[in-house]
Image (cartoon, rainbow, N blue to C red; front, side, top):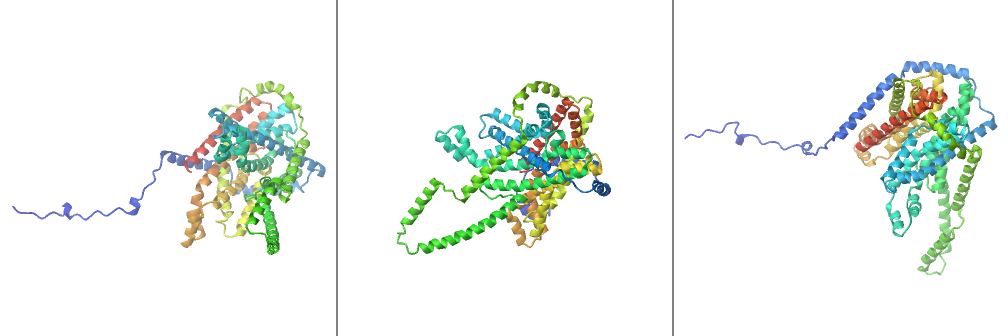
Length: 604
């Protein structure tokens, strides 16, 4: 039998299979169906934003033409005028007092609401759902609508504004306060419970001291927002600078209207500085924010600390010199120091810190009392208004669009959503540029960073309502003015959030790329931006949520959308239509907030 040679196709003669490469052997992350759905949803929102921007009518030629209209408008306005000094001082104090009273009312009510809404303090799931519902509902209902209702109950004055600001602010303060409660260290609270402490003692001694900084910061931040929002309340009968400005613009007295707008801008910037000072005085810590107010306070505190350090060093040298010749045994010196410290702690001497804190406490109390007095609250109305509730409730329920058909109202609501989407897209594009240059780890030098930070502060100081009114006067009624006003204001908010997020990314990847010789642009594109993408998505949805509420308000002053019909329904006493419009806004806000929560959870 003859043996045949193995063929070329025989397995014994095949070349060995090459080992898999490193990329092939590396584990691959499985993409879940939920992440794919979230990505597609995000893409759909971006496409809808682009379409909304195209439909808004904003274009370079129209903006150039509007610039010519702006020149003619300011030429027609002439010199800026202001109310009489005494009247201006009274209106300013009244506006501040109204805002402070409303914010303090919200701060007090938000404590039990947050206690019920927090998962680690709520008595049960039903109470937690109730607390969360109160927060969401008060955030969703515009403060202008609340002011309309309270004007019917209490007539014109400061009380409707205080209640509208207070109830609307409960949503934001209670939500952030509840989140802070859920993140506490449970050790002190459990220790108080183990020693037989009551629920009240657990909260006041084990929970409140941990969340007090967050609560104070949230209340102060909300106070700044309420000051900006108080302008629009003047259009529905709330006294203050907002009402005077609405009268001025409605009577075509643009010079005085712009003068009051300038006063509001300066007041907003001053309030930011005062908020930083109050935060430092109440908490005893230096502010960590990067706004104008925090910067001013930190600069003063640093100078004071350097001076104090010099005095301490001189005192230490004198003590060492004087103690060199003493015969006191070394072992007794620590015991004497401990005894002296314990005695001083029990005696609580009136040192500079205690005097300063006490002075700030009395000043704060005086400001609160002055705010209540200048608002001239008719306390009797809080007792008599209950009899008006049934008659007023009948006017608001059941909801009905009245003379407007469903298609018209749905179209107006879609127009409001389109304004918010287009404004968010514009703000996002410019905020990424400005916010990146405002970040310490991205800006090429300190001058650029400081300039961008100052620009963001100036933008945040201009209330969107005032900017929308000026743009409407120049460009006319429609979505273009509302979109531009919201986009401009959104740059100040989103740009600051982006800058802060980029400065908080891990520095390790950035340093590694720098060590390999990468350029600043390469470091930004490969390390900074990828790490900040999740925060960028979250901040953008937060801005979209804010813009939907703001777009409703801007419609009241002629910015287009559902706000126009809301104002007409309120002025025409068609309160059933007001209820129907508010329900539409509530559903829209809840949907956007739900999508935002889902996106943050998927992309975390």
